[in-house]
Image (cartoon, rainbow, N blue to C red; front, side):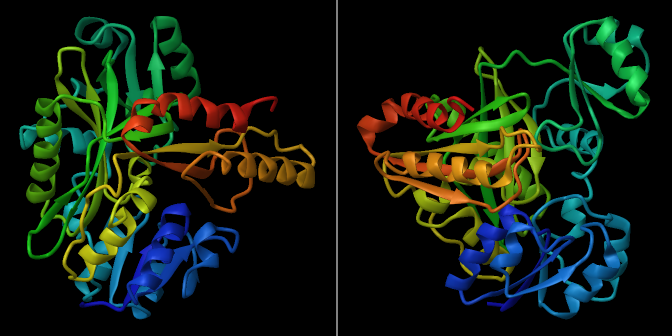
Length: 384
């Protein structure tokens, strides 16, 4: 193992879950994060406070660890490249991240390596949309979009004009609207020796571009599974990744598989691995970046589902009353067989990911997964 001290840029729930795995692997985790209230602060061995894109703070982080990895991609790449030139070891490497951080650049890179994506371009005019894409059409911020932020599904010219009145749409990525049958996700890892580990294919369900639940393994044909895994391997190899990536896909009605987005880090679609696989995606990231052998990606049982527990309270709700209500609902969810709740300790606001529930499934329960999801969501959101 090459690094017993690992620095993480970001201190949210992904780093929080990584920190628990780090202690099992004998790794000290140091996080860079802006606030004492961020989830990973409670579990990290040490903390360097500063904004995620503050390279001066990252320089301090680098002095405390052997390797620096990432919890999110909202970084100042140029400033970090200057640190890399002084010998700071980033994993994944900054070269691996460079084609991905801008969504337009990412689309161009995928096209270059012959990975299928939706039709895309840069916004130029309403006439271009009508002629080349039609409505509905998708417009996306090129940087810093997540959980639906910065993604706009435009139904007609009127909607386009309304958006143009709010933001400078000339800076946006434009994509064809894909009437997909399902959305899929996969987690893939690669270490410095080139070994690649690919997890099972996951079905994900988004509402307003926010993930609500996942089921693993996805109920797809062997042909689709093979396509998804082959694309994941291609991406990891071509980018020479050392680390873990989450890759989102659209599955169309005619069984075409299109890459929606690459997240150069652990991903919500892989949260089931924390309880459902022999090696979690968080342990896998640590293994990959420190030069360890990659663990098993096999499921411990027939399958697993997760349901994200999203905030639904208004900010002016009574704080203690809100906490009590959330705690009561979590306890009721735990009455479901083989369920585990991971609560991130974040302040609540509508739509924010506050935690997630994992349910480990046997073969019979796997066929009833969507009913179990409905039960959990009924408990969590019922009579808000």
